[in-house]
Image 1 (spheres, rainbow over the protein chains, first blue to last red):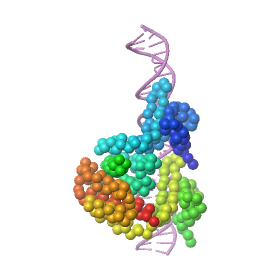
Image 2 (cartoon, each protein chain N blue to C red):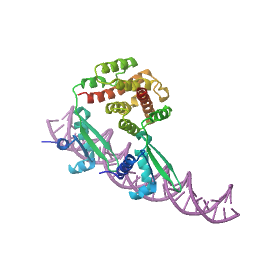
Image 3 (cartoon, rainbow over the protein chains, first blue to last red):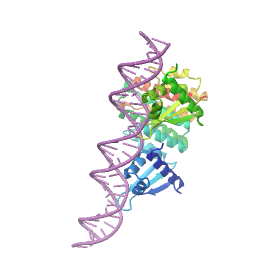
Image 4 (spheres, rainbow over the protein chains, first blue to last red):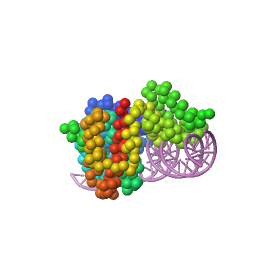
Length: 160
Length: 160
DNA sequence: AATGATGAATGTCAATGATAGTCAAAAAGG
DNA sequence: CCTTTTTGACTATCATTGACATTCATCATT
């Protein structure tokens, strides 16, 4: 029932959990061979499951002795995300919100209830906005970004 | 005589009751095949019989290895507030938000932190929206109302 | 040394297939 | 009639692959 994508995700997560520093270094080609799939499949998994919105940082190097390093973002890295959102041109898709909120929950930044509230404001509430003059998806996604930023600021203030 | 709709509803409900966690995962296409009906029939059953108002949460994923997850959740008797706020023509000022959130806190429906999150989404985040094409105060207040409505829906879900 | 060729990795993107969602119209009940 | 059900055409999303581009280390040549 699981897709290849899901399987690779679980595999990587387990590796990270078993690592001493919540960080692993892999080779894209090798991993693709293990799962007998296209190398770009690995990129897809990384892009969709290990984005910064899900609490991971991915660095890589091409060429000979190339590698991919996947690091779980430590708990004190909330500020970079806030400053990232500080750029008013940023925008977030629904899936970004889902990912980030899940991460915040996992990391203990917010409770399940708070996560539900956040998703209510950023997903359900922005479902049908055509009649308010906010037809474009881009504007909606920007609005989402601003709501998130303000909410994150509240969480940051609380932690301090 | 039972309609197909009813039959599928009973089938799903029985599956949920027999599940350990009041939660099942199905594939829309497979289920439609079992009952030899159009796949969208499943959506109809879910929409009419398994809405949040009936105490169910439905999540899904499209694409390869897609699924539909149906979860039964406890529901509450405070629903009148939802219909009161469900009026889309209603709009709320900042001060309305302030007093309502304070009331929710006093009544123990939400925590201080949750109140901060709500105000962040409905006050701070809606401060400067001119560049998104939402200059009018009326539109802003309507947007505020929708965000509040969705957040209240969440609160109602967890108030037992 | 500096240069350049070569091979070995990773990145990007668009096409394809597999799901699920939406919506309006037809069909069926009451 | 009016409401509910049922269907199908169309849309949206997710997964997977492969062709092609890009980057980097190394080594031979000068």
